[in-house]
Amino acid sequence: MDRFAVSLPQQIPDATFDPAAFRAYLRRAEDLGFHSAWTREGTLNPVPTLGPTEVMTYAAACTERLRLGCAIYVSVVHSPLHLAKSLSTLDQLSRGRLEVGFGLGSRDLLASFGVSPEGFVTRFTEGIELMKACWSEPKVAFHGRFFEVETAMEPKAYQKPHPPVWLGGHQPAAIRRAVRYGDGFIGAGGATTDAFAGQVRMLRAELEQAGRDPASFRVAKRVYVSVGAEARLEGPLSRMYGSADMLVSGPPDACAQGLAEVLRAGADLVLLDAMSDEAEQLERLAAEVLPSLF
View 1 (cartoon, rainbow, N blue to C red):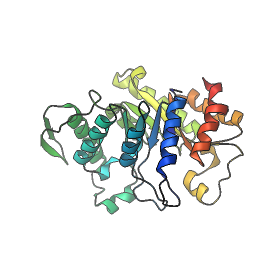
View 2: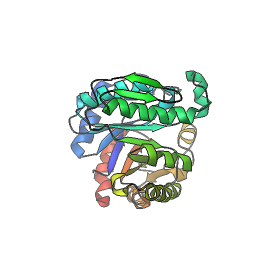
View 3: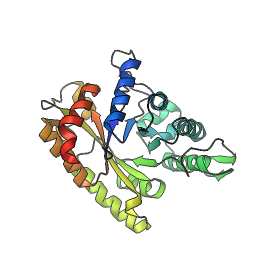
View 4: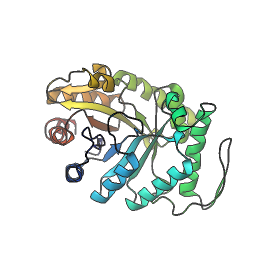
């Protein structure tokens, strides 16, 4: 199961969190041998959605081996110092089980957080560099366009030099940033498998040009999945997931075929994001779909 991860149940449509069900889901995912469990950031969302850092912290206390990640933080709307502190704390609490994903998000969100669109890509990359420095350097001496820092942050992250940093995105510039600033690339759930395959080809070319070893750079993709009857994209599902080309759904053999195509496209980690009843889908994936992919 080391090539498969699951999504943490963050959305609570009835606005009531069920801690017992959450713990049971996590422990079952760990017992089944999944590599990791992932959150996402959705601060402004009409669907009740729990915060990623808090969910991962709770999950860390419920598990012992399962790695925990966020794909992705829209880090440009955060103070990199506050985010670095929260994540180094979580890496310590989990004893080095944290995976961190960053992405630009949408320009449309910036005004809501008081962030100017001017230079926001530079703000994004500076923030990543500053967080890495906070996690690994005895004293931070950072002088950028947006951040001037001369201080220290303790404790450092548990993992050395820092937790794995993943970058996401769709555009060629995002892939170049992943190679320059990241340890891995996460393909979006909204990308088709064919589009993802094209991103992987571009990624490999950029890694070669940068002189980076592809074997040390991880590639993942979020996949929206529904084992069972063919998923119908109507109403909220259509708005959330887009076209049917972005889904892996249907009977177990069809789901296995769809996931195999993602692996062949270049993913070494597939983040399975269930479209319904996460606990039921977890069991069906483990029993009926994934065994044929080992």
